[in-house]
Length: 78
Image (cartoon, rainbow, N blue to C red; front, side, top):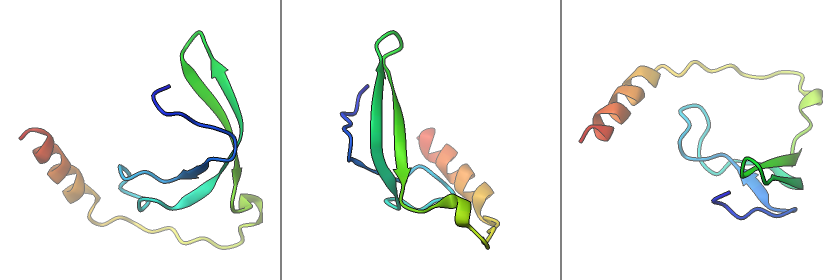
């Protein structure tokens, strides 16, 4: 529980994904459950988009994924 979270907080994509750009809004926190035994949060998130109504999506192949992973590994080893 390093981060403080509350009902109503906005969830966005992080900067560590090779698929999703950083800071894309996903939804807001609807409920927060704290498991004192494991020190983890369980969050219910109300999504900004209704995923059940998706009709068409684009599947995009990341042609530079291997290059990105290689560069990330090289920078970790510096």
